[in-house]
Image (cartoon, rainbow, N blue to C red; front, side, top):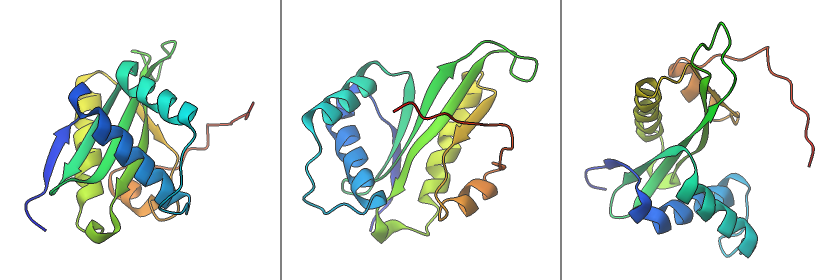
Length: 152
């Protein structure tokens, strides 16, 4: 394990973006390593990265060892969010061989700084139990405000 490099992904990193997201989904969902995702799902993921208003950080050490994505949303301005600019943190993942080294922390910090530059006033996320300590350390708090209706 050498020096870990953090890069904000560009369009030229498309295959790295797709591969890292699919690896993360396999691990988080306990899918077999040879799981094949439906073509439509992969195509929709690619399309989102191509046109989506997002920033993705890749942690690199002779290949991708971690990723984290911030998806930007613009909603109607409110008193507590006068710009209407919000973001949702997704796909925070570190390869198991590199965990507990502060990599996810560093990736999320980079995304938080990027969000501030863009005028984002709130970052939301869906946390796993194992991820909660990291997010608390970064200043995230539990929300009592949100309700969800699943339509699919």
